[in-house]
Image (cartoon, rainbow, N blue to C red; front, top):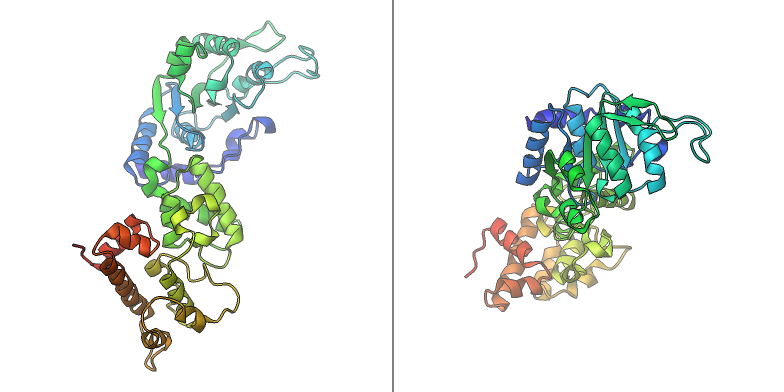
Length: 404
């Protein structure tokens, strides 16, 4: 059932539903065209969408800005019997209150200053299809009264006309506001709320489904690559930093960030240093000195097929290295051990070596030293290595290193 939704939205064309809608009413949303991820939160959302889509009931989609409310509305439309008819979206919060009536119901020529021609409203354009009223919580009280009448009687009049027109549309509304709180304050009509709230769907925040982050990053990276850019790669350390971020802008903010990084890092993996400052936890502003030394060593092996050490170190091999700095001098400045052993690390044996295994051995040694110095306290060891505690715990698990 979930796959069915994803397949439909994969082939969905936004233009088919909005070709008849003037540019001002279209909403540019840099979000996925399908619900992406495998988290329990998004799977529950998909199940609700599948359940309500075949019915003609009104739907109220709730959730913070950027969570994909319009995406959900489009999925519902595409799964409904109205899918061959228009899907028309209008942002009630983006249109001045004095113009919203004309936008929704249309107007006759000369009905107000500037009305030089007659014009259809959104209800007429969406006839037989779906009308998506985004940010319904921003609608003025007088406009709420008029909308309620249309929902009750399924008829309306254009501004400046006394001709009653019937309408056949399915209403899907959305808001980031708490409408029940607005009702208590007198800012939203209770009768309109109950008309719209036949089948509520809560869109999860990105933080509440953070396990979907890698899949979302991959999807946005793939979408940007289709536009002619190189496929973006993100190091595990950068991904950890993104997972620790609060994401007030949710999926829309993530989409914008990935597009930005695709431009800034077209030919190398994204490291922590490439992330805008707000996405970098303060404790991660600089890599541990030992990790910098390992990265410097890896650059000396430019022709090695194992150059990408990000899965092991949790950081791109290019993150902190710019120009032609003296790698040997950098290495000798690091507290990795005595100079003889440091030099041997930089020497490639005649028979070659498995770089990943070699670096893993070094990483294991450094972690062991940190744990020894901290007397087995993981939090203190993480500070010595300039890692998050959870990141070090995960490394310990992957390396099979037990702690006391």
